[in-house]
Structure formats: structure tokens, C-alpha cells
Length: 249
Length: 249
DNA sequence: TATAGCCTATGATCCAGATCAAGAAACTAT
DNA sequence: ATAGTTTCTTGATCTGGATCATAGGCTATA
Figure 1 (cartoon, chains in turn red, orange, blue, yellow):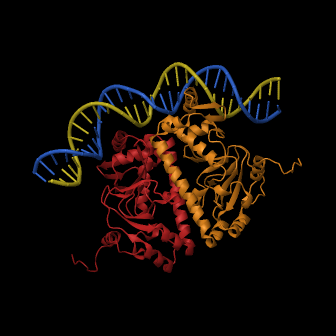
Figure 2 (figure 1 turned 180 degrees about the vertical axis):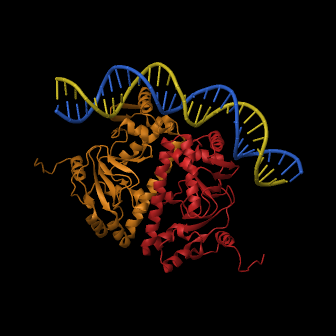
Figure 3 (figure 1 turned 135 degrees about the vertical axis):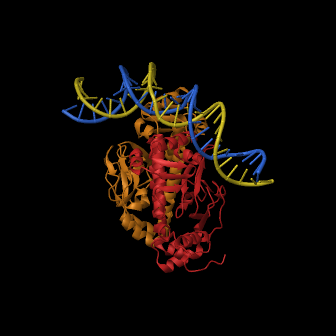
């Protein structure tokens, strides 16, 4: 496939960057969403050196398991991951979905053990940041530490919002809130806010929102009847965002 | 009250330290639970200088309000605080209870706005850490940054556990889990793991666990009938901790 | 290109916990 | 003390969403 002419569309370039595990931070399309934001270029080069870029994870493959030794933080490079925590009786809660540029493993720092299970929802790849090395670097680069702190704070804040959702919202409020959160994150990544693919199953959505699969199915059908969305398998279009926002509360 | 003889019981000393807003970190009984842990003594002195020790907050008084400018992190010195986040329609979720040595405001870092409301549940006091100054200090003291990061990570991990609780547990599992979490935190602070005072109302507990007040009342009564606990107003004794642990799942 | 094992949709039934109701107890302020 | 307010308890009823049941659709691997 020697298609190295100079009229390659931008989209192909992006796709190439995200899938090529040799691309450096400087050239990465996720730069403005990611850890290096705000670093000076020589600092960035140093950071770049310690990052391990993974090959692809296939759907269902595990990035790490709970209770195992914490060695690295991960940033999603392409695809989607989910994290789950398990109760002793086998029940599991999906604690989050992670898109390109988002961190996985931040909750593992304090006990040097991963606190959750992380697995790919589709073919995906990550940038691996060995934590020890990252800390050494951080000692000389306060800006890096600050970025990490800010990231953690953001995730914490998001989780407080999820607690409000889980504790106080009705099924339809939960789903509407979830859909708009996805929408916002796709938009931040340069994709359509209205049309996207659900990389997670109905079951994962239900679990994450503290509902039953059947409830999600019924709500999707109802939202469609009410012309709020159009849904077809994994493709969804948000038709009436204003109304969805109203439903969120 | 010139009772400065040298046979004052230890407990009085502790009480004095926690209530005297001039006590320095070096002499604080919370030292081993708090931010300064692991700092060298000259670093500790520097940190000590930037800390503002508050007068008492009375029950119900606000430490900060959501959406206001983030200036400081707080560490509880004495008493208890709760944090809440509000949905646009007035519903509120109690996102956490905070005991001595615990941080409040960590979720405000990323947007420089407090993300929640914090108020005292009883007469309480805090150490205030002006964030800007703290960051300046952090530039020279990597150990301090690391401590902060670890704290954030711990809270994040706790919140993931709460998501499991809110999303997947039954009412009795929720309450048992909550009681054991309180027990553990009292124990870490040198108090009895079995007998303690509930500084929060039934309403606050219910809200935090995503239940109705009536459900909490009934469960307390039932747990008492089953000889798992003895409860009398705000005083509670955990009688059968093993069984409570089993109930948690 | 077949087949086993998912995932999804929809109807019927059920139940844990919410909501409603009404006193009793515990604070608070005068 | 005393009235007013809030918090707590307990009973009666109701309901949102779970669970059970069924059938059709998808997709992964041989």
C-alpha cells in the first residue's frame, strides 16, 4: 500500500497517527486533550521518551485486573475501555467508560494496587506511563505534577456527578444524562455531537447507570417514539438535544 | 481554669490540640493521618507557615458553596462536614462525610470552582491550605505534591466504591457498608470501632445512600431487633460486626 | 455458511423501597 | 417552663423499575 502521495485527506492522517504506535506526543492529534498540555517542548520530549505505546487490544481484552500491582497509568489512544469494580458476591459495577485522551488507573496510586478491572470495548490502544518513571520526571517538572493533579480532580468531580445520578435520578433522567455526556465527549474530540456509535453494549450502559438491560431497551424505544433520538443497533442520533437536556433535570 | 499540672489525661491534651487553632502540625494529634506525613521537618515548618487554622464552624454553617471561586483546600481538624451536589431542580446528593484529617475541596482544582457545597454537621474546625501558595511550595517539595496526588487517588478510589454501593447494593447492604465504613474511620482516628456517635442525621444518611429516611429508620430498628446493633438517638454500638460484614456482600 | 452464544426487544408479573400519613421525641428559642 | 420546629419512628399503600419469559437478531469462529 504505497499510497504516500501528498493529497491524503486529513482524516486519514489522524487515523494513521492514532493507530501508529510510534507517533510522538508532539504529533499526536490528542495533544490538546492529553497530559502534555502546557509542557515546554524540551519537557515534552523527555515525557515522550518514557511513554510506551501499546499495540492494539482487541475487544474484551483486559488492560489490567483489580488487586494486581500498579505499575503504570494509561491514557487511551484509540478505541474505548470500561472499568469495573466487583463486590465479593460477583456483582460488578461499571464505574466508567474511557475515550481517547482520558486516563485510566488514577485510583490505583494510593495503594499501589489497581482498584478496578479495565478492558477494551472494541479494538483499542493506549499510551502507558510507567508511574515510577513518571514520578521521577515529575520531581523536575512541576507542571507535569500539576497536570496529573488536575486530571485526578476532574475525574473526582465527574464521579461526584455520577453519585448524584445514581442516587437521585430516575431511569429516563439517567439515560438522557448519559447520552449527553457521551455527546459532549465526542464533540470535544472533534466528532459530531449528534451522531455517534455506542461502543458499549446495552448491558454495560444499564450496569453503569444502575438499571436493568430491559429498562435501557425500553427507554431507547420510547425516546425514539418521542422523536428525541434515532437509534439503530449501535448507531445513535440525538435529534432533540434541548428536550434531552430538559429531561436531565 | 489553671489546671496546668502534669497529670492531665492524654485525652484532654488531644482535645486541647484539636480545638486550639494555634497548634502547629508538628504537635497535632492528626499528624499521621494528614498531609504532612513523610515531610522532612524543615519542609514541614514551611508548610506549617502557610496553613490558616480556622475558628469553629457551628452546626449548619457553610465552609464553601458550589460554583464559587476555589481558593483553598481544607483539612478537617475537628468535627464533621458533609458535601452535597445539587441537580438543577433542587434535589441534592450528599456526596461525602468528612472526618478529622480528611480533605475537602479536592474536586475543585480542575476548574478553579468549588464543585460542591460543604457544611459543618456539628461544631467543627478546619485547616485551610491556600491552593496557590500550596502549589508554590509544591514546586520545591515534590514529596508534598506526591502526598496530594495520593490523597486524591484515595478519594477517587473511595468514590468508585460508593458507585458500586449506589448502583448495585440493596438497602440493608448499603446501611451495613456505611456503618462499617464509619467504624473503620473512627478506629483509624483512635476511637472505638464499635461505639460512636452519628454526627449526621438519618436524613443525611438516607440521602447519601440513595434511600428514603423511613427506610433508614426501619433498618436501624430491624438491625437492633436482630441484635446487630444497639442504637439510641445518635449513639450507636456495633454488636455483631462479623454479621454486618457478611451483609455487606 | 453453519451454529452456538451472545445481545436486543417487548410483554407480563412482582416486589423493594418510595411515598403518604400520623404520632412521638428531641431540640431551640423565648 | 412552653410553644414551635425539626427529626425520628412506625404503619398503610403505591409504583418504578426489576425480574421472568420469549423470540428474533447479530457475530464470532470453525
